[in-house]
Length: 154
Image 1 (cartoon, rainbow, N blue to C red):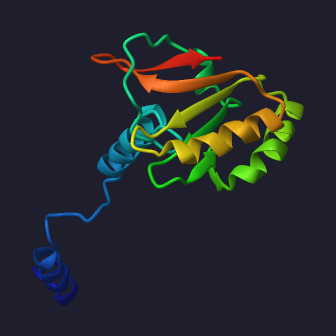
Image 2: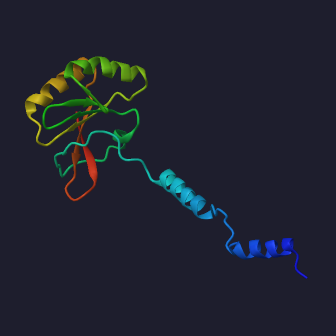
Image 3: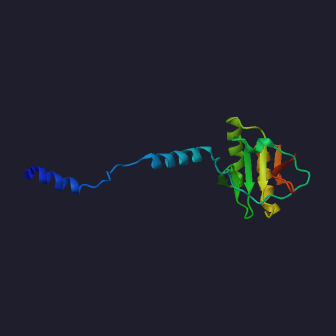
């Protein structure tokens, strides 16, 4: 015996798909977690301006040059001067050095001069360093065949 409601139930059941819709978040979560771990473990890019440093066979390693509070002055090929990562005029160096020393920086400056920079661009910077009260200047260089190292000059 078939009733009209029973026949309607059979028609509705035959129209239903065997596939049930659901959202599987396992793939999304695993990729998100992988990206999170990747970006947490990958070291940040090196900070600072990177000049083309000259080579010196007698270079000695200066680990203080990579400290966060290190006073690094960079002179690029075109004569631009940077104190840490900020472009400055050479005349601003004495006040910046005094501020850095008050903040606890070591009384030593690391000078990174591009190998193609003119001597006329370097002299005013060294004069300003002396006006700032610093006599200890370390000139950063590359050692042939090795990683970047620094040669001290006094």
